[in-house]
Length: 71
Image (cartoon, rainbow, N blue to C red; front, side, top):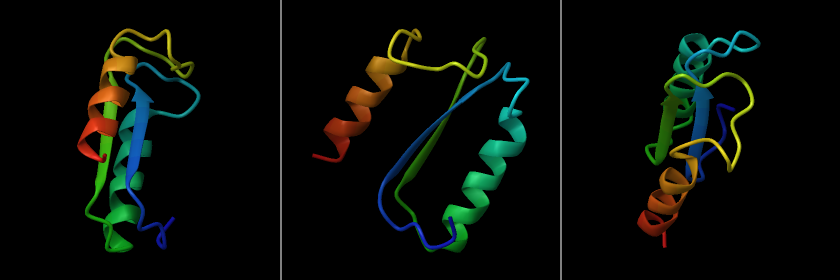
């Protein structure tokens, strides 16, 4: 991941017991920053677990907003 320089939108579930969001989000930020990537967004979805998808409240809006900002 330390060579990823394209725009990144990463979602994590606040209540994820499979991949704890605090650790994962911190590692994503660390690695993307180390790659020199300054175009990334890391979103932690409150009350969500590991199964975030298009039916997750707020997901579609976040993706839409991110895509509009990158159009």
